[in-house]
Image (cartoon, rainbow, N blue to C red; front, side, top):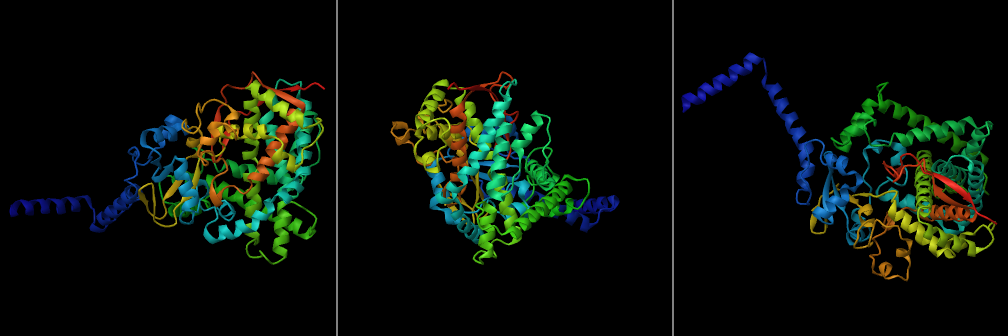
Length: 537
């Protein structure tokens, strides 16, 4: 036996010497292999007791996502229950697909799970992390408390005339395009939403609705180059937030390494010309400079009568109450966040509502009857009217938001170890609420694939029996969307004014069913194309 051991040792040493491999090299190789192994399997090991399918090496459950699309979460919830694992590359997500458990995470245990987890495209991006959405702990609560007064009913009422002026521009552009093959409805509504945010958040006239009209008439209105460049850089910034193959290398890498390692790689790649990370960093730098210039311009004006969001923040900073909280970098991030959060989401909901209503004539007739009973067609509803006089419209919007949920996942991250549904989750666990699964749960919404606004009638049995947190399109708890009143005011006003003058039908040039595009928020891949029918006198 000793002779055999000696022979093996001599062979190993001889082989290593022949290959020129040194002991330090072997040690380094073993260390790298161990680190690589731990990088992929340690996150899984910590959550191994949470049910879910076995992850594929390197890619996790991405093959399942490719196979089923966003329906993968419904499939997994059906197979594994209301709480399960989904691996986005190496990163395990604990998915919660039950209304009571969502309440548990979003409200009851909020203090231990109040932060949002960061999607890979935003990791290392100051302009996104310094705004409200991804801010953390005490900074988030301080910032939220300072901003909430801007969304109180009195302030929202002061913005109604601004919204109305852009809705009128939308109606004008629809009338101009009536005789065309179709109306590029989603494009028009997005332009309107951006113009509204431009005026209500920045105090600037972006002029996208006028630009659309000019393009149709071969006219060219002189536009502020700073505004034009700002909007182009904003659009690029949104495009860079996508999580697909054309994404930056650091974003793709974020699926396979920890966030701290991703930040390091992102910083390195951002310094290498020609890389996508370099382009993103340069665009973000230009965008920051552009916003800083806009803020400086508004700050010099010192118009105390302005009611826009930026003016309110500048006034708060001038008063000294929130001077540190609204330093230049945070002010910049907050103003951009309003443009990001308040445009595509609102436009998508308006488009999906009109798309669904125009497909269901009985809903359309009932909605028009309610709108006509409000008063003459040129009567613009007040903020109070919008809240109290259109109950069926409320039901229609809720059902449209259930049917096409603009953000079907709500991301959270545990700040300390806690227990959910019997499972112990370590600090730093990503817990995502699968509210898109809840929205199609037949136990909460019988015949979930049927568009039926009446299911949200407060007097019907279905509404009475439904769990109060089965439908949470704006999120849940203290971290829910603070701009939801603003968004609903814009959505309601737009739909009322549209149906005061028009009915809509699907264009034969639009695909059916609509193809959706899944990024950080839901979108229509090829847009909504409609035919507008002018209503009689």
